[in-house]
Image (tube, rainbow, N blue to C red; front, side, top):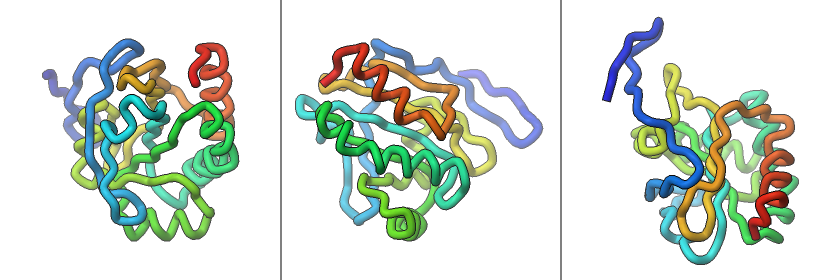
Length: 165
């Protein structure tokens, strides 16, 4: 693993995960206090695993609202949505309540999920990235340049063209 210095801190540089790679398993605390693992969905559901900088900020709120509003479309494609940030459970709960978020937000305070997915962290905020994972646990698509306003729509369109259900 290489390390380099940027203006703010040292960053570890690892190979990016791409389509065809096996998605790293994880277990994390969810909004409601339960533990969620990626392997819980293997053989059952596709997963949209999206990383975002911080609860209750402009772009992150818009992105979560779009996923919230499109949840039934994901369910129709046998897909669950999981949001990941470094925020603690209390902040996730407040965000969920305020924005009526209808899917789990996962606590990654130790940055282990970000590290396993090679999602860069700037200060205390992960970059906005998403991984579409199929029922076998394989990454189907990695999104590294995300426009929060249309991200959910783009994923649904990709799922349609990939015939993912």
